[in-house]
Image (cartoon, rainbow, N blue to C red; front, side, top):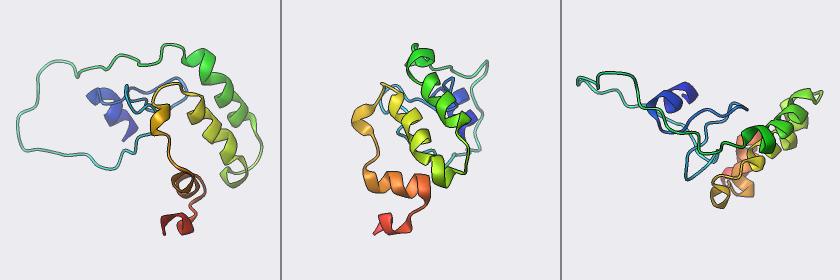
Length: 112
């Protein structure tokens, strides 16, 4: 799904492996793809411009900290959340705390 979002021009992949939409930043959910029985466009797929040219300074340090942390996601998820939080794009669309608990630690109580 991430590669599809990238090559379709919806949200390019960042240096830290997150798709970054120009408005919503990394706070998007990629849930489905539509396949139509129609001829597609010719030529190379559209490429969205990188909405954040400063990823190496803003996000990569947080990514390196998360990647270097020992343990499982259940223990290190706050570091991975910090990677997403480091992105300056789309901060107004950040998931609320219940969404974060559900997506990072699969806490089903957050759904209710």
